[in-house]
Length: 324
Figure 1 (tube, rainbow, N blue to C red):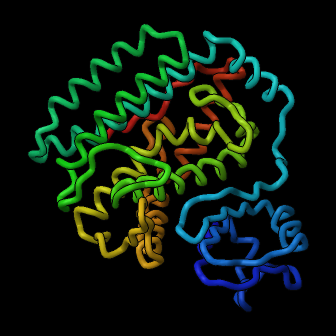
Figure 2 (tube, helix red, strand yellow):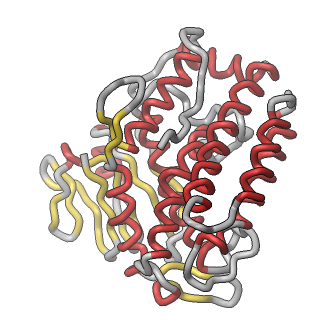
């Protein structure tokens, strides 16, 4: 299955039993998701056809900032699982158990990244020790808001180390999202969005409802379960890719444009990132439990299945932790 990234302006439409963009057919049976970065027009005939074929569309504005997704009607539905999802959200003890495990897994993967660069002379022992101490404090908490506070502190320490990890001379003092105010914040926002949309697509292939979450509070106009699962995989997929792109000078300040109070990626920068992102998703590892090779992308689906088993009482959930 392929993702299609469209940067040009034009019309996306149904033609015969397929979808085409500016007279280029997209092979609907092989299409996973479509990402629209250009000014593209499409009608309900096209949307209905994409929905029937379970193809999601993700929309980005002129500056490359994510604005939303067209999410096809769910075909894998389970009333029993939906009831369990809500039950685990409403029960504070059950919700906090899942929230803590998500943060423990995500912070372990952050720690692994720091350990990797520390072993290569970046002097990150202090940051690693601080994160370990925060993880220990996390185990005692039952309040989800306090758990989120620990997550924020871990991220703050982690991001403070990026100036040591990144070889390019780019000042990065803190994480700023809306709008991103420098090169690294812009990269983080863009790549994290890609991880978020990938999580949405993988959740869609399961019976989970993407609007019911445990770490992040469910809210209107967002698929908050994607945010939960993204916390686990951003260190592996997003952060490691960003370090590589910057340290190999594949992405430089020339790939960005500055406005009065924010930065955004030029098309050439986005294309380089998307090319590398696809490679990352298809990276293969030997899974310790399954004893077979799986891709990074499939690891996300496996995480969904583990959450389902936990909700149904089949097996206690343990978040994915990098072991290499």
